[in-house]
Image 1: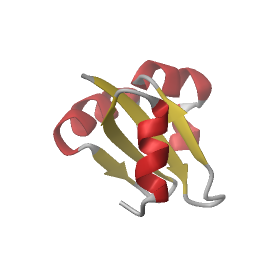
Image 2: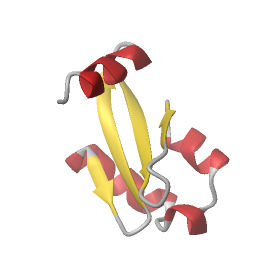
Image 3: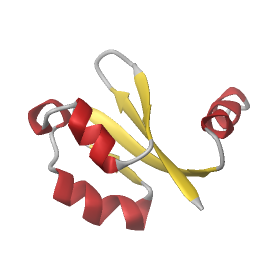
Length: 76
């Protein structure tokens, strides 16, 4: 099964989709996210969600990115 990581920035409300934690940390610095890559690697597989004062990072099982978009539009 594939997973997609949805990052929501609390200040702006912007949502960005990533296919891996590595892609997420390539695009953003640790200071910008407020959490280290190793911590996300430990927390996300167990809880499927991480939240701090700057961001919310969620892991969704999907086949396509559109699966996440459909779920959001349905209010789930």
